Image 1 (cartoon, rainbow, N blue to C red):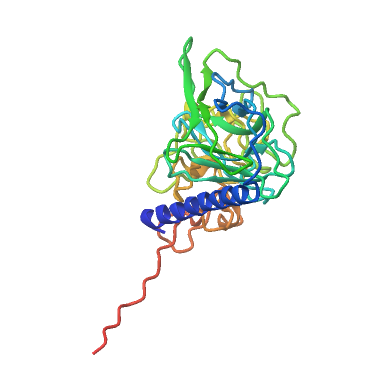
Image 2: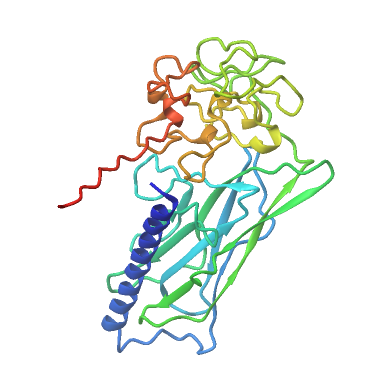
Length: 353
């Protein structure tokens, strides 16, 4: 699919999302035309807030809370997007439990609310779109608490003695909005926050029993193994076509061709090994060295963390074949199948006489 086609699809998806919220607001207004918004003062102002200087845990993950204060207003619908610093933070949109929204968005709402979360890596004004609304009377109100938590993986490593602040805030296009139980727009403010990276924070400690078979294991003072079978010596894994195998160095201890500062201290696959020491960061059996830092499907997750790098619906470990250390290239075009994006088929133009 072309970039223009992808942009059109994302635009349609966003339009449908906003249309759904608009419908909810109209319904609320019609069913509650004679209902007041409670005892709130006319000057009441609700607030959605993302705190500043959220820390990164030992796995390299920042849990970003979105907090709500009603100021006496009864809010039954909210629509906003979350924008973050793509250079230092990474969102994994995987929906492993197939509940319709990413697993790294954790809602904390009464059961009456219908929620929606969608991710668009191409939307630089707000990659993550959030909707929460109660459609059925008697309409519930958003509680004054953390409404949801978004988990972002760290990508930046500050120099020694320095810190980096990465913005996490609310998108501006469209502007976030809240609706009262009567269907009217509520006065509201939206406070942006941030994630704080510190170079002097301790790196994760690898416990000897942290990794279970058949997950990768860490031998003392050695490069972590990639699969249950033995890992080839550095430089013997066939590199991505046209590249030269990396050599061990302090900035690339797992010898996967991606610098530790780029991989970060997060443990993407949850195997007990931080990315900067993991020779297979997503634990799909294919070495990070072969997957590379590209993003062939444009989904916002680099190949070495993506379980379906080319976005064709077939897991990488399946397309790689029986030997993931030597992935297959069935069409012989010099690109492994799991990284190969098939060309679109265009029918010939027929001219009528």
